[in-house]
Amino acid sequence: MDSGGRDVSEVALKDTVVTAGEAASRSAVLRRLRLTDTVFHGLTRGAAFAVLALLSGVIVALVIGAAPAFGTFGFSFFYDESWNPVTEKFGALAPIYGTLVTSAIAMVIAVPVGLMVAFFLTELCPMVLRRPIGIAIELLAGIPSIIYGIWGLFVFAPFLQQYVQPFMISAFEDVPVLSSLFAGPPYGIGMLTAGLILAIMVLPFVTSISRDVFDAVPPVLKEAAYGVGCTTWEVFRHVVLPFTRVGVIGGFMLGLGRALGETMAVTFVIGNAHHVSASLFAPGTTISASIANEFTEAVGDLYTSALVALGLILFFITFIVLAIARYMLMRIQKRVG
Amino acid sequence: MTDTAIVAARSPLYAGRRRRNTVAKGLALAATIFGLGWLVLILGILLYKGLGGLSLQVFTEMTPPPGAAGGLLNAIVGSLVLTVLGVAIGTPIGILAGTYLAEYGRHDKLSSVVRFINDILLSAPSIVIGLFIYEVMVAPMGHFSGWAGAVALAVIVIPVVVRTTEDMLTLVPDTLREAAASIGLPRAHMIVRIAYRAASAGIVTGILLAVARISGETAPLLFTALNNQFWSMNMNAPMPSLPVVIFQFALSPYEEWQKLAWTGALLITVAVLALSIFARSLTAARKS
Image (cartoon, rainbow over the protein chains, first blue to last red):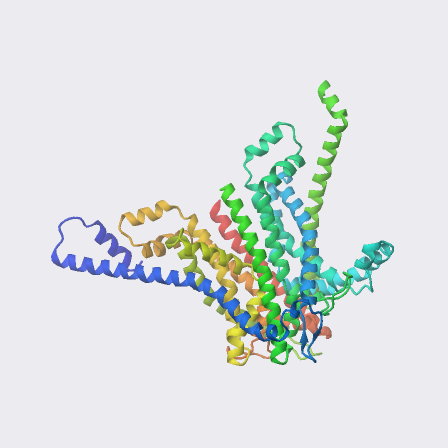
């Protein structure tokens, strides 16, 4: 311990007679203490402002970078499908479409599965296993996304191509809507593969947040429901879920935010084709995958700017989704706490 | 069984409810096995493919040109340098901002805004962070650089550290603060001497989790630090890193490169998972 603390106790506890010299040194110490406190207060406040500056910096930098593209293409940037670096004609429709479709696939799978895992962990699982299983599921979230990418490209995509996709194509051949959803040659890579990998990545997010909010349900509520003879499932379905609805939706939104912005895993398996196609087996692209694939190779200011504009759109979408998520989670926290 | 129980068991309504309950429980178990299955599957294949290429060469030789054998030494060292610098830049800012949120401005307007913004940054797409650093560092400087990569990683570190620091400081009982105040200790000294000390395990956990998070990050490095085929310690030049090398090698048609990519993937995963388990055990031990 250095001098500061000892000085303080000496100064603070000496309530007996004080000589002139002591008084002088005492006020000097107090001045120093006040100074360090002010400086530290200022530093922490500055750091808090730095966090704000960071977000505004991101927005400003992206807007400036995207300006040439928006200036050239105007509003048509949002609904134009063409993406041609040679003629410098760029439109964001295909990446936006790909981003939304792959995230939708991910959520359709991850939400029910994640909820059921959380149901299992909070209501059914033996106590000893709860922690290990919970940690194992969270490890899924800890695996870097590039690992999902390399695994998806070399293991998962070939598996889908060989066993799953041909089967689905022939099975749904005569079903009206599904036949166009699952059409075309089985490439292995494509939007469905990307969506499935995203589902695995989002699953731990949905699970851990759902589990946390389920755990926060007052036991009295559940016990009352059991008391009138409800089954475990009925307690979950009619007491726990309605009580935690807001928090659960917040968890979905958080997962959705991750799915929308996920880059590396998708880049490996999406195929990077700027086409909007109805078939989920077709290669496509997402906003993040386009940026990752093309940014370093982009020649010309307009090409770079178009990619930055894609980044701005992605940031805007995820910002809204995450803001909703936080708002919902804040509401459930207030209700429980 | 009593009479009423038998009657109840026979009633179709009751039987239906019981059936639904059993089905739901079965589905929940299946979902859990499904989730754990992916973990086993991914780690299993990673071990199988990665261990095959693991040798001393990986740690002693540079990344090879196409078609030749080599190692990952420059990429591993590059990753370490970038990660250490990223944490070194991001942690002080993160801890200070977290301190403001928990100590000085717990209930003020600025804090609630910063808290919200920080949560958004926490889950913002990392590729957007890469674009941001490209716009503010790489484009003005005119070249890719290790510094740009380190700063991009620091931007990812900050929100993680802010969040955990604030959470951990809020857990410190107020009686400690009051005791310090009652002997006349100014706030700054109370925070540094008492609050930080009480929350140290949690804050360290936050930093470790941030390290785990950035050591696998690829997207923000793609167009900041870029990559480098050779040994480079020059922070003003493009810098190799393990994730970017994996990305490049895995998508290449060369078998040696793909093999190295798997080995690199194994190294990263082991490092990241070990870090996050260690970080968790640090706080778990403290709790019990």
